[in-house]
Length: 289
Image (cartoon, rainbow, N blue to C red; front, side):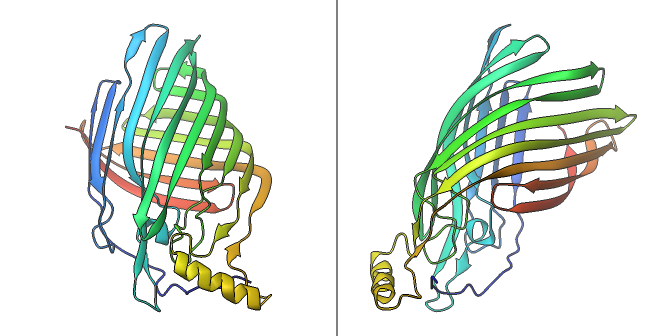
């Protein structure tokens, strides 16, 4: 078995701030923070530019810094109960470029990106990604649209930091991830009520390398390896693995327009990912200026 310090807390609370700006369909920008009340507060945000070159070509460029919300450790950070040190609170900073080409009523796309992952007392990491696919509207009539397509996804992290000992990040970070997804999305409006339902079904193959118990602390790692050499029941690394299987999810959104600028709504998300299931229920109040 492996060994390490246990986490002393399993909850965190705070209030996050966010402000976004959109003009036409070529510029989006936002700025905000991780929830104030966490051990450390990070500034987040991003800019997306989507210039149209001509009727047959569009580029999309994104630069952003985002919080990693895979776990309490990666999002809020946690305290080592033995030594009192905090670690975690991981953010991703990077960019992505994409080319989009109209095909009939649909479009083809292909792109790639690069990101760096940093956290307080967490080993640094990098991620490269690439993807391609097609989206096509089966039905398009006024406010009603039914869309499907095909998405090919690939990404790879330099290090496997998904665990929860000191220096690990607590986020999914395989060294190879390849998936094919088929999405289906339906949206429409009835009076002041707009709604959207959809789902995704796919297949994935992924691989993780073995990971040191203390990936950014050579002294602690050396102690762990020395103990493991003298005790065959202990291990100084988390083992690697390779897996394949089905992935997918369902989603639903409902919004009611209180005024032309103000709306109230909610959303439901369920995702079965490569190594976890996640359910989210959201309430929101949107105001357009």
